[in-house]
Image 1 (cartoon, rainbow, N blue to C red):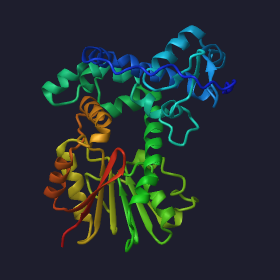
Image 2: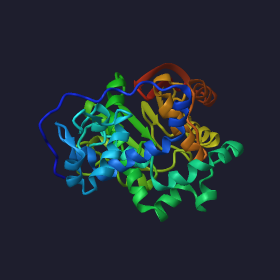
Image 3: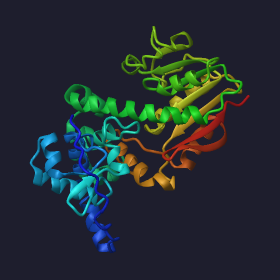
Image 4: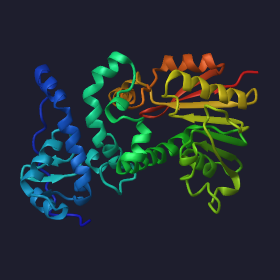
Length: 353
């Protein structure tokens, strides 16, 4: 896509003052408009079209093939929330947030922005009161089948967006996990429910003497990181195992990593942890990495994720205490709890003797 570049302008429109409570509530109940605006900008590629210098809506409209006046209205709405900024001369420029909608940004959230606003989400959010009443998902009532069955059978484009979003998120957090974990004394790592293995690959790249195993469902590991697959740069130190960790874990390791998979129902969580305890030797480390709904800096994000989990699969994100309780009940000895990044925490555990 062509990028628009014009003469820089440095005079921004004055910031919007903090509204009173009644207006803040009005803004909140119009939240769908904000989400839809982000989705539209992502689908149109507006952030990709805008270069490092400001451009008018008319100039951008030529690139993204829209009408200029509606595009100006879209950009003005997004600018109210710090996604793009409008200058006094009518041009628009990037902000730290708008750059995250670019495909080429190393921390791009474009795929996540699309995933969280996929068409099915607009069908289930209005049923949140039903989910709160029942404590279970409403997805099957709305679409007549389970969430992942629907994605793969009826919503192929949405499934593709999901895979891209999960891959992007995993790639970005994998480096944070690798930077956090001390692998002194560890010769083998098992990434349980590890998706395509980006965390494992990052750890193996950082620690050349360590070997690792990726375990996840067959359809997931079939798309494993190419570094781990046959012929890949890490294949000599990596194994890939297809299976459901709730049914058993046929892997012996010094360190087990469980990242963002303990958000199912309690029975599934118990079964997964039981499998880890059955597979691990006494003294093995188990690092559980999760989003927490009581983590103040990311609460708006994680509590929203928590509600979406309730709607689509009947799952839940954890508080610090609820995860401690489940890990303790499983028989793990819990040590330090540390932030991985602004939205993930690592619970260091040991399998007791």
